[in-house]
Image (cartoon, rainbow, N blue to C red; front, side):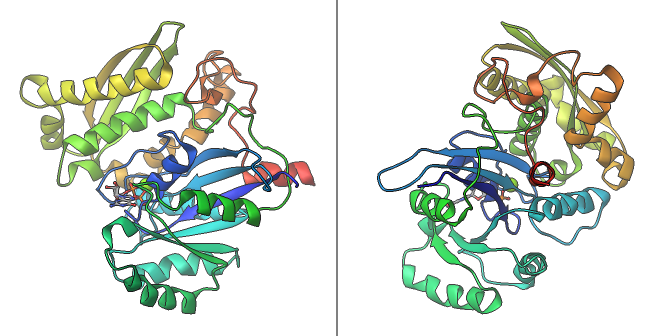
Length: 347
Ligand code: GDP
Ligand code: MG
């Protein structure tokens, strides 16, 4: 039984449960989740190591979570859609995930259109079946989707309750080509810890604020120093207006304190060290429409810049390749593999 491996892209509308599925399959929180649409802004790789089982070969699935498919109306939105398209390039399989509690609408068609172009092999994943009593109600939905795309499989799941995931994993592995492990056993993501810290802070902003603030906010980590016992993090929460800044700071700084404390505890869990977190809030009017600002948020780009400036990603700290669950020096490729790297090595 050959070892199988490949890149599997998770595609769907905002809020379908893509990031919940990624976290559930990897078994670790790699992507932040919220009930607000457009929580995920860049593509996120998560590695699922599937051991050899009775009668079945083992494998490695590199899952790629993506921002929700939508018609962009800002530089940020356009960048998010570029992330979706880049994730689709060169992947072996696409999981088109839909929320079964929602009716089909033109936005679903838009997602399917992205798929049709490269003629990729795809599964239709019906998510949130825990919210549907009568499973027969799914049949017309399946019919409708099957008319629009030639799906290789249709798999009902609940990403939240972790139902149907073993079946899904088996089907994915069986579909992938024989191939090598792209990541070492102990690595679950290519995301730098520095960027994951920014996301954890942004999640706390999403959880604790409402209305336009979640959309108007982004987080940049200005400093990230990893020590054996203590990690020092300094980060800035950017919003668009002084009024939003006032809300984010809160009366007597209470809101910022709340966001900071919850984020710090999560970063401590991720790093396995104590964390000293300094948080700042800045108003940067119109940042979502500034191509330059939005491009600078891209951690892959940030890494490149640091490599050019210092010759190392972060003054010699290898945290960018450190698996989320351990802080030992990894033997992994610098920022993980992408389907493109793979194509180069095969040439
Ligand atoms: P994404 O935008 O597609 O990445 O969606 P998220 O993973 O962020 O999830 C959006 C919302 O749907 C969150 O509130 C999740 O808790 C919820 N959700 C995701 N999967 C399920 C599921 O299987 N069942 C239910 N009931 N809720 C889910
Ligand atoms: Mg998401």
